[in-house]
Length: 452
Image 1 (cartoon, rainbow, N blue to C red):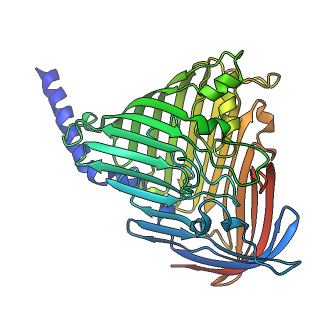
Image 2: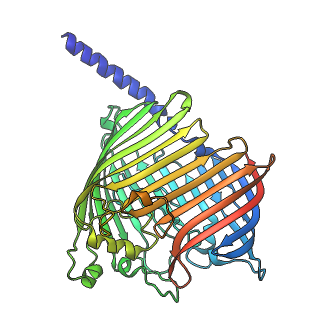
Image 3: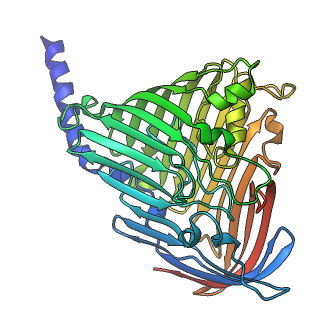
């Protein structure tokens, strides 16, 4: 009898505690970096692949309640002939590229979320198909995409990711994930957080710039299709700790044109399975916010976890061809990020197959990523991202080549509204002829920076 009484007491206490905390648990983990209001306008010399330009960039970023807006308006002039540089607007979404992002709501907390523009960091569901994704692989060819989600009456919802609003050619990468929270309207701890979803991803992109010498959408134009099923729930959900568990099964369909071009290859549909554990943790008074995810993955033949990641948009055909040599294996995916004193935000990610082999060019490569963002520390401020894929030797993780994307900005405050800085970018993307080249840009500048 005493054991039963004790059990009921603990259950009721936990129920009341969880109910009291649920109203504020999501806002407890909200990043201080999501609420910045700043107007930047800088002028300086820009060197792009050895060619010098002089001009300015206007880069305001605002947040009003649930709304967020970031712009990037370039005005660069060729030093040799004085002509304005138009390359950033000549193709694809054109002038829409000035919208770096427009956002309404928060994908993880609000019933309605919409983001237009740069989709870096987006994932669909728990990320087995679309994960660690970006549509901004090139500063010159950055795309304008859409990510949205809606949750109706806490029970049924839909996630959407569309990679590129360039409507030339066939449809670009489209991801859909309908999901249900069958007990979402109840107040039962843990049970109310159960979420069941199914993801469908397709790409029929056949867009090639006129005069391109290298075809990069031959296989994607034939159709890339994938699907997955997932189940997730929160094991602990309080103001200090949010611990979630999920499981995912995914399948990549066979690309018929790739199979026809490689009749002797052992190639067909591939599938994979993953179990993940993710946690948010905060110390009292938000001195430190932590997010960590660890995921154990099982790969079948012709399957690549997070197939639609940052490398997909660089060269779709090259990414699809990787499936030919992908063999059965296992691996680990992990991420860790920390926000310290609402001033420094740093994170890293690693996708590491078990059978990585520096002597075998066909072994599954690792992927490494780093992110850094700071607010004003003394007179300095910094922001940067770095990712590299296809690593068969982790000792090569931080050398820049055609598998790398990097951008870092360091600024120095010269006065109340004035600053000087350096903007460095390394991207790998197609030029006007469709040839893939490293794009190296260095831009020292000075300008105006006003925080609201």
